[in-house]
Image 1 (cartoon, rainbow, N blue to C red):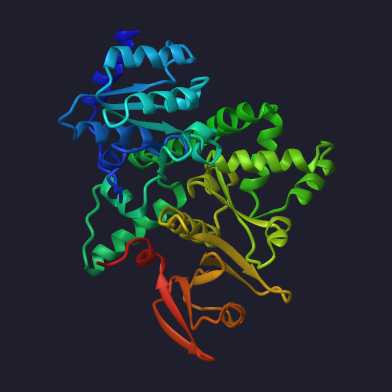
Image 2: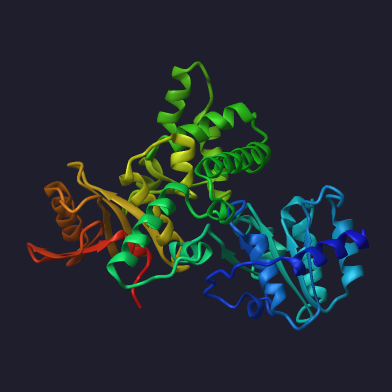
Length: 410
């Protein structure tokens, strides 16, 4: 297998790649902990590992463990260490394809601590399900599809503070919202090809990361996934009733299991309602956001900008979320709601509403005022197409255009 390992490392070193905006020094972190790079398939995890390796003066190697020629057990991992040695940086892509990888990592980390630095990647979120020997020995970094700033860098569009320059950026934003931020899609010039690539990504994630992991029939998972793409609100009970209406019987427990795996695979995110009652958070319907805005148009065919705006704002919030922060949505008994509540524990830090167009509906102001009153806040952030401020009943509504939100001016 040594020839395979050498092939992958040579392949990695020959690749020409664009840099990503990474707020942490993952190489420095790997000196003390096993670093996991998790994220949706095709978001650029492999490229990020290769970029990290290219900057190293020390001995390093990159191996993609999804290679069908590599055995799916820990004998292959032992063979890698025998070939590579116990010092340097080892980048192991899609490590979760190897049976028994958790125990192997725990053992190798203990035996080579401070000498062999391991950075691993997976399309399934791993840290939340780690076995006991690995707990406390890992650090997780989540990689998302390109941010809008990265998108502009990948398309070689310069940010110019002129009227013409702003017009170009606005057109690029529409492309970004419609086709999303997967690097391969961004590099593609043809809109039809972009859609076909997005559809292939979606099918792979549904088949490999949800159906296969849950040991559920692909046709059944396909139906659930399509239901979620077409929805903005998810309730397991309503999903069960929908399936019953088309002649499919299943239990609520199975739907909840698929919801969990869909979120671990980053295909969908589910945002609970804010409540001081923990039971309510799990019982009330959750808002659904695909892991990339490109899935909305390519899979659902929905053309409305409102959903694209809201999904883009959610992904920007999720990408920049601090470890102790959480995202909820809020709704009162009269049906007034706000899209996002950012909190630490029960301490609400920001209330955010998303709206398309420069005319803000009175109901959105009223919802913001009700939320501000409940959380004792005096500012509401309203992201959309308008810029400026409005003051009502002691509450400031701060209007931020989506373009400025996704691309803040330094």
